[in-house]
Length: 240
Image (cartoon, rainbow, N blue to C red; front, side, top):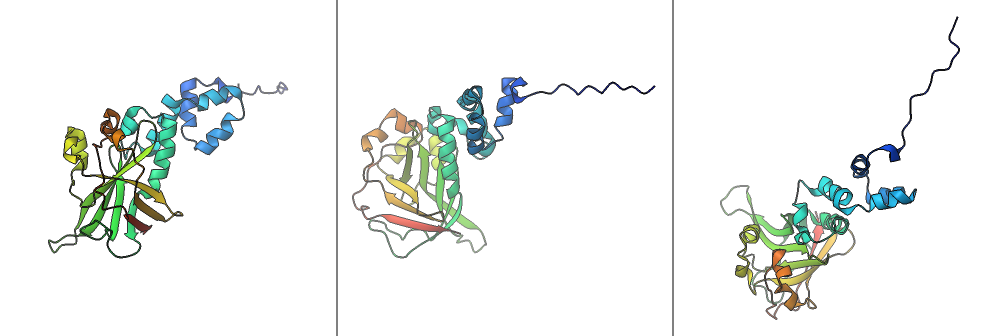
């Protein structure tokens, strides 16, 4: 006789049945917008999506961990949720840009670079002017002149060396020889005009006394002061 007893369905599991570490691992593959939608479905999920040390660190590390040292940004004092927002904006800079406009900038001995390249550093982004090699080959020379990072209070901070004198800036940061940068860098603002145009202007409101603090030195910058002749400085580039 045929067995008329219906087959039992296997036990089903909901997301809440998984251990928290498994839940956080799964959530780390979502975007912030998707996390926001997920958190609105249940009160317990709200605290889960606010887990900074595990979830937001995993989000940052999964996306940028192979490009930069996540734990070093903001001297490790910034929350990873704030860091995700900052790095997401900074990522728009990565790549080649060509100069918009012509002519010299007041106070500079040379015109602004026609071609620049932004790339990840250990805890900052470096902007380098790119020029053909003088060796007669197809090689190019990169000369770093702009550094962008984040203060421990999550505020962005950017400095410019108009003459590209510190080619080994990353090594200076690692060695702690930041005194070599004393009074040599100019505080600047880096901002987007639309999606494909970036402008660098001197930050006249920068609190110079803050840069002398231990907090300022720990993110890789020493004290700075404007020479006074860069007040009209403004450089712009279009994405290539």
